[in-house]
Length: 268
Figure 1 (cartoon, rainbow, N blue to C red):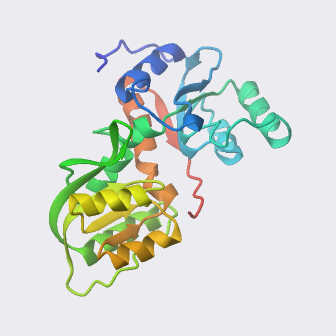
Figure 2 (figure 1 turned 45 degrees about the vertical axis):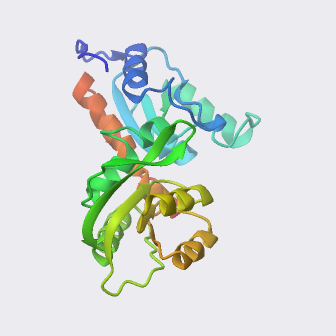
Figure 3 (figure 1 turned 135 degrees about the vertical axis):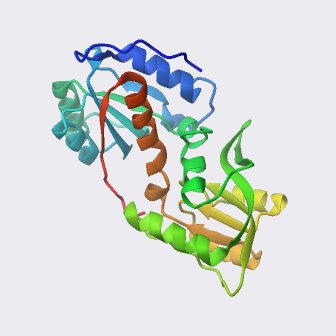
């Protein structure tokens, strides 16, 4: 973990100093990820940062909003290269041109941010829902992306909390389970595309009775019900708002940088 850094003047913080700090606290180089993630600095600017914008996705909408807010660093969870290699033409060219003209840097963090033990999407969603993690969940290579724990919480209460959270972040909660007097004893969380064959099998292996995810294929709801697993879908976008905003707030504390939230819900 980095030690406290000297706070610069209002003229701006050196971009390389911010990138070094982020790479350190997020363990960017040591965290495996999907090829399209390209974690870390994805686009440089002329060298200094005076205002940070934070958004879940890199898109024309979030870039435009960040520029309107006079930010010169945009933090995102899903970065510039998520869709793979694409020709820089049309809207992609226009978006890049806007970035160059506004001197905007882009920093992206996917799985490093998902799994962070203090400001990660999974741990923050757990605590938002009144749950305290006690272990890892959703293994990916040699790391755990998500979290799990124990509770004595009525499942209906968790669903109500998830609905309140999701609605506040432009999402929609779906919980295709029969509640009755059901109580959640062992829970697990994997934000984003968290429902998969692998996570359902892992939940069964770990004795999880309630799985909370961002989204998943339709069949996962059927399979979970057949296995007696309650599954709560809080929305992919909504489930991944917490970490990126916490990351920007961390930069504010570390470097005294102004920051702003960019909200661009996808409805998914």
